Amino acid sequence: MGKCIVCGKSLGFLSFKNKCDECKLAEQKAEEERKEKERKKALEPYLSAKSANDLPLIDPDMSTAPPGAPRLILKKDEKIFAASPVFLCEYRKDRHFKYGFQGVSFRIAKGISYRVGQGRGHIISNDILVETSKGLLLVTNKRVFLQPIFEQDKPVSVKLSDIESYAITENAITIFKEGRQRPMIFKFYDNKSGVVDDIFGITLNLVIHES
Image (cartoon, rainbow, N blue to C red; front, top):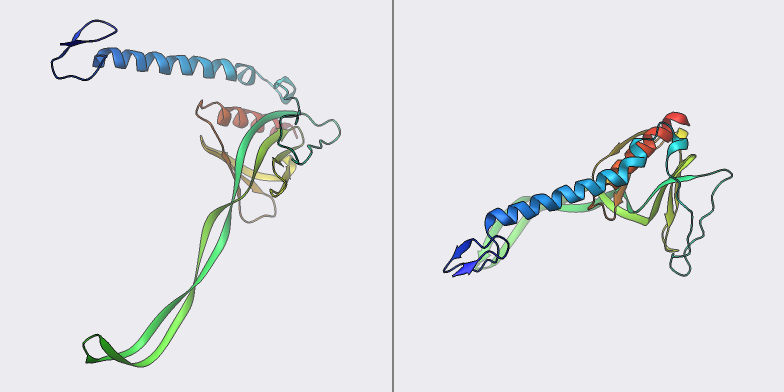
């Protein structure tokens, strides 16, 4: 008869478990509490910030970037407050031709038909979300900037004053730039801790209102 390795409770003759359900739930709860504690600790300097000047600064060190990576060039007196690896996704038009037939079909023999009429078709256009670049998304006191990691990726720079609106979810930041019809969607490469979106949300709120 198996026993729980934590509390010693009997698990039954045919059980392949090594822990009882109560101990598993307790461990899961303890893990969730640990993660939440770490999350609050990481957010503490951002939650206590009253202005952009109170935000933690990030050192613009690109020494760990791959060989050939574009060099990060900051503007005069520019400071980095938030940074995260992202994929830039944008909406693109997808057009394809759909063929149609109008007329009558006569069966001549098994598997053989003769059509009388004409073929017609039309263009179908859809908006699809495609990945157009990737790199480090930086929020500074002057702009939101995508620093490419590889040469084939394009940089993107949006002045804080040109941001018409923005939305932040757990997975991405969506930015609407003034004069641009389609939004730019920056998908976080990794936000398992649930901290990245909060850091960007707090940072953007402060720097935009003070720009």
